[in-house]
Amino acid sequence: MLPSDSAWLALERPANPMTITVLMRVEGLTTERLWEFLSIYWLAWERFRSQPVKRSSGWWWEADPTFSLQHHLEVHTGALNESELQDWVSARLNQPLPDYRPRWKFWLLPHAVGGAALVLRIHHCYADGLSLMGVFQHICTASPRQPPVLYGAVERSDMGRWRDAAQSWFAAMQAASSPANRSQTGTIDELEGPAPGASLEKAATNALRLVNEVSEFLLEPEDSASHLKVPLMGRRVCRWSDPVALASFQAIAQQTGCTINDVLLACVTGAVRRCLEEEQGEVSDQAILHAAVPVDIRSRLPEGIQPEACMLGNYFGTVFVPLPVDGESPLERLYRVKHETRRLKKSWQPAIAWGLTGSAGFVPQCWREPIADMFCRKASAVVSNVPGAAEPRYLAGCKIREQMFWVPQAGDIGLGVSIISYAGQVQFGVVADEAVMPAPAHFLNHCLEALEQFPSS
Image 1 (cartoon, helix red, strand yellow):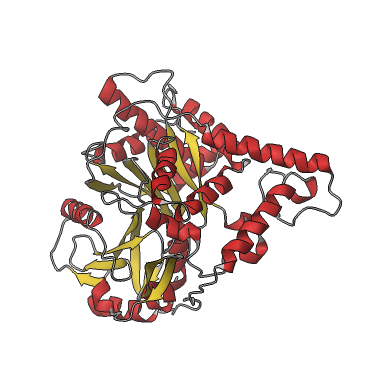
Image 2 (cartoon, rainbow, N blue to C red; image 1 turned 180 degrees about the vertical axis):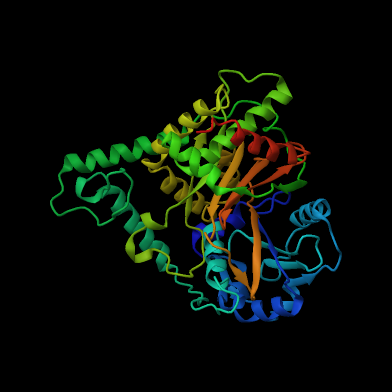
C-alpha cells in the first residue's frame, strides 16, 4: 500500500474509526438491481475485493480468499421516515467495520420514506472523497438506459511508485520557484525539474522557502479553548440539510468576486460563530479557530505518478483555514475567508501535509500520536467540499435524487462538516461527537441562516 493510504490505518483509534460514510437517495432501487449492479461494476475495482493486511514490511493489499458480496450488502426492510433514517445512519456510523474482510459495506433501505436509501461505509485507506466520487461518476450514468463505458481498475502492488514519487516530488520542490516552472498562481502546477546549470542562489532560495513553509505549517497557532475542543465521548451523530439551489451560492460569489467555496466556508464560519455565541454569550476578538480543509493535489504531482482514470487512493493534503468567527458581518467573514484561501492556495502546505500524513505508516507507534495531535491541535473542525455531477445520474437505471457524505475527523477533532453539490443543488452535512454537539441539526440551520444573511442584489 502507498503510505498515503496506509496512514489512515496507522492513525485510527478505537473511538474514532477512519471511515467515510456515503448516503444516496435512489428512486425505485431494489435489492436485485443493486446486487447485479455491485457484482458487475463495483467489484470491477480489484481493491474492493482486497483487504489491508499488516506485515513486518508494512501494509499490503491482499485478495480476500473467502470474498462474497453477501458479507458486504445488508437490506433493511423497515419504512423509516426522515428523522428515523438520520438516527439509523448515525447508528451505522458508530459501528466498526470487521478487520478480517475488505473494509466496506452497503446497506439498502428500499422502503425509506421519500425514496430508497443506499448507505455505504468504507475505510479511508481505500480512497479519498474525490476518488469515491470518481467511482460513482463512472458507474452512475447520465441516462437510465446507458451502461457505464469506463470502470474498474487492477490493483498494483508496486512500492517503487512511492520511491519514484518522493524523488520526483523533491526535485519538483527544488524547481518550483523557477519562473519557467511555476504558474501565475504560484502553485506547483508544472513539475519539470530544475534546468541544467541552475544557480546556487536559486537552489538556496528554494531551500529557504521550503524551510519557511514547513516552519509556518508546524508553528501555526493552536485553536482557542471552546466547547469544540473538549474531550470526546466516542459516540457520533450525523445529520444533513435539505437541498439548497446552487444558484444561490453562485449569485453571491459573482456579486462579491469570490468563489463558491469561499461562500460555503463563510456560511460554515457564520454557523460556528452562532454556536460559540450560544455557548459562551459572545465571541472574543482574540478567538482563533481553524478548519482542516482537504485539498486535491493530483494535478500537482509529477506526471509519472499522477493517478490514472478510475485509480483509487488518497491524493490530498490538508490546509488549516482560519475561520474569522470574530467577524461581525457576513461580508467581512467572506472577504477574510477569501484572503486566507488565496494565501493557502499559493503555499506548499497541502504537499507538506500529504507528506507528513504519509509518514505515519513508517514511524513507530509511539510517534504516531504526536503526528495526529499536531493536526488536531491546529483545527476545531474538518470541512470537506466535494463537487458532484452537474446533471442527475442513474444507479442501476434508477435516478439518484440526493447525495451526501461524512468524513472522519483525526485525533481529537469532534466536528466534521461536509458540503456536496449535485444536480444544481447543495447540501450540508454534519457529524459531531456527542460531547461537542449533541444536537447537530441546529448547526445545519445556522449554515442556511448564514446564507440568507448575505445582501441580495
